[in-house]
Amino acid sequence: MNKEKLKQILKEHAMWLQDNTSGKRADLSYADLRNSDLRNADLYDANLSSADMRYADLSDADLRNADLSDANLDFACWPLWCGSLNVMVDDKIKAQLLYHFLSVAPEFKTKELVEFANTFHRIPEVPKLKETKQ
Image 1: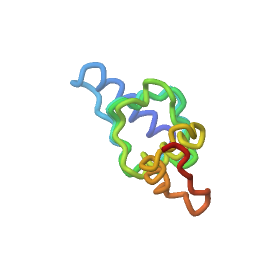
Image 2: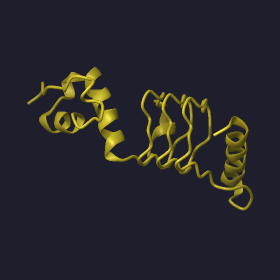
Image 3: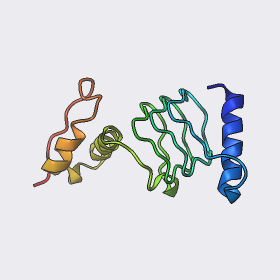
């Protein structure tokens, strides 16, 4: 997706968020957003399902209530602030986030969490996690 079209969609989305009578909810489902600079983007309640967001910078983006089901977030920058709460994701993204979390917080590696984290789609390229907590 070119920058101008994305900018227009985000502008209409901002208007829609303000009063729901003007503008239009952002529908970026299936959009090619690879390498996009989405820093500080207001994507609250946006549809990003099945979007290709590899290498996208989502720093400080507001993703609350956004639908990221089946989106490709490989190598993307996930915002670690309240703006990423309540997003809708599929099991693929859940496993990816959990794998990364358990990699830095081994004290939480219970059998159930490790089993799910090891469904991470990049497991052939990275080592499987091992349970450390009973």
